[in-house]
Image 1 (cartoon, rainbow, N blue to C red):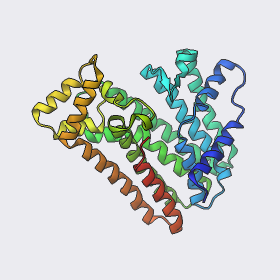
Image 2: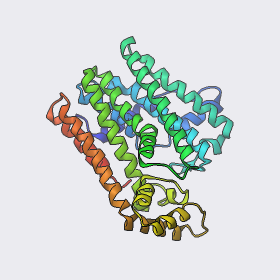
Image 3: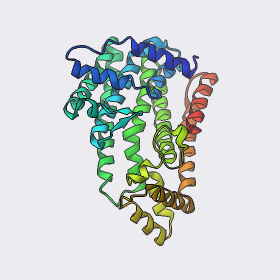
Length: 324
């Protein structure tokens, strides 16, 4: 098995060889731009890694990995428009640089380009990849809509929130891994189990992101700490704090999340204190661990060598303990 950083290098080399910039420039330049901004490349790396886990050649998985990365970045371009975000990965967003209309159109083109990468596979594999991809793409859109709806709701439940992050984040992680299994022509049972593994790992990943947004180290987190609090986002931390707090503290938290204060540092500190005092911080950390261990349980059912299971366990543990 290759190491994670090697898979990252393999994918970046493949990405850099893609002839993305062509005419009309204003359609394709934004695509090359967003794909060139970096990021952790977790999803395409998972596709390559899973292919090797099931004894396939990672080279054969590069087009599928590219499809996953193009789709993920397409969703970011459109998310940034919806959020009116000025920056992505520390750089100006596509719609700020080229305008909203170009951002929408380039994003649409990215979705189509993602599908085109599957055309490099023989019909049976193509059909399985495209079917999984269509299901996943629609679920990501559903998750995004739920996220938008929750912004104006005061009655969001924890099960609803978990379903939202499952669709918005976890299903793409799961699909990226299952695509590797499909390319490697793994058994149907193993392909389903690796999907379940990825789904639980994706949920743990997003809950960890929620936690780090409030309690991460600004030097390592990679974005503004407390951003969700400033934007009044009803994350798992917030929902657990409401559930666990006294009436007085719950009312104080709701008040803090219904206003925009000039001094956000005071707001962030006050909210974090309630998160800690209520037990919401610990509950979130426990949930991250629970979903990670759920992922590990699926490995026991998988028909692969123990050494391959260890590779997946190490990846999951590293993800659970990440600081960025």
